[in-house]
Length: 251
Image 1: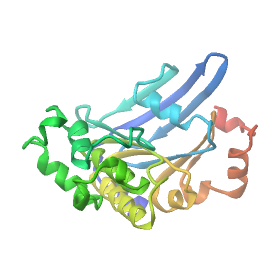
Image 2: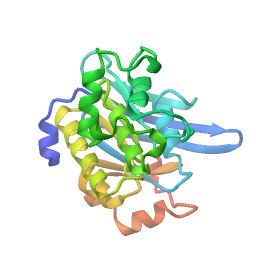
Image 3: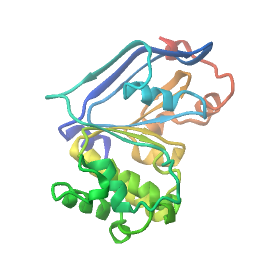
């Protein structure tokens, strides 16, 4: 989908504004006066070095971190649902937990040991089908590859259908087939007007798939369309230990 086509889609997700958002843990500054906007219904990527504050920023967005400054969400209608797909799933791989068990635990109120509820079973089946994991529903989660577990995490992010979706490096463990699954999902979200906030290290994928990208290393170093913004000079500054912060980025 082109930027022009994405602008024509009526957004169901919110616009998000970070206005001078700062976060300090102990004596360490994690985020320093971060200001940028996420357009409603867009795919907005966050790139930057490890320890640059990307995960802390989305935790702030999800209400999990205290912060200074202002964070605003502007919904078109009533506030909707927020979905989150973490980078990895931490669990005891020896647990006898199947894919269905995991989906039941994440997507329904009924205890997972009682099986899938009739209310959510169709949605779970459809979500697993969309990520290519329908045929592995009875496999133990611990027996899956890292890429397969990542697909299951993507599936749980589909239930219930979110209007704002936060993705923390969803492509990190995916093979080529899994990456294609993710790209199809991303296009579906774009066509549905979902606002997607996407942390990603694959800069080529960001150039190809994101509407806008923000470079973050404690402060905003750049913000704009990926094709024009991800220049070698800016990326060198972004991934340096002590980045040069331009006056416009700090304003």
